[in-house]
Image (cartoon, rainbow, N blue to C red; front, side):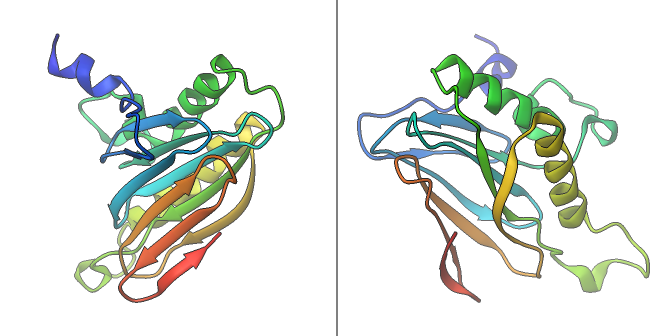
Length: 174
């Protein structure tokens, strides 16, 4: 199997409680499992929950859209393509109810290195995720975005609770 094909497949559900989602990756998990992604800087974690089905989907997106990338093959890498991927995967697993989303990350990392008026990739990623969710009809019910510090996410697929951890902000529950 090619490395490209491997990158396009979601993380595999393990029998344990945690499913790790790496950068430019996604996963779907069911009741009793946690989707976890670590080290969000300017990247954005898009957590979509199907409350009645007790299912969750998580993507760790790197870029807002394909217009600024040479390699466009991995949909989980881009906010505008990750959202439809997650929604379709949840629907395929039986989620019929309205879905809700929570966003984490999108920090303005190393802002002091940007020239005046430079591109804040974190803000672009966050806005692209919001726009894609709006287009998909998924309401954003909570977020912990912006700032200039990194975060990690623990998403409980049964309850929909997203715990955000950061050195600067401690733990925050969305």
